Length: 129
Image 1 (cartoon, rainbow, N blue to C red):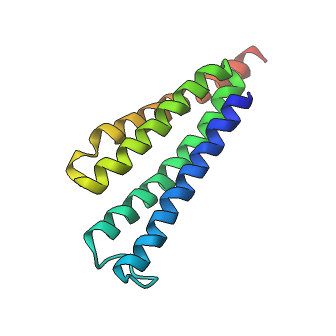
Image 2: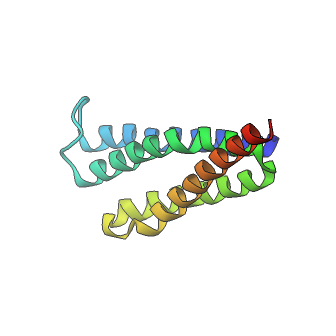
C-alpha cells in the first residue's frame, strides 16, 4: 500500500508544481489575481492547473479505494500512468492545446479504470459480506 500512497502524494506534488508554474507566469506576464486571462501562455498554464484539480477529485479517491479492494500494485501502476499522462498533458497543452489529447487520455483512462475497480471491489465486498 505504500506505493499507492507514494503515487497519490506524487499526484498532489505534481499539482503543486503546476500551481507554482501558474504563479510564476502571473509575475512574468503581469496577470494580477484574480484575472485568469491576458496572455495565451498564462491561460494555458492556468487551464492545465484547473484541469488537473478536476482530475484529482476523481483520481485520488479512486486510487485509494481501488487499492483497498484489489492488489495495491495494480492501482499504483495505473497511478504512474496517470502521472505520466498528466505530464504529457502539461507539455502538450502549453505548446499546442490542440495536441493535448494523448496526455488527457493517459490520465483520464487510468482514473476511469480506478473508479470502475473501486466500484466493483466495493460491490463484491458487499455481496460477499
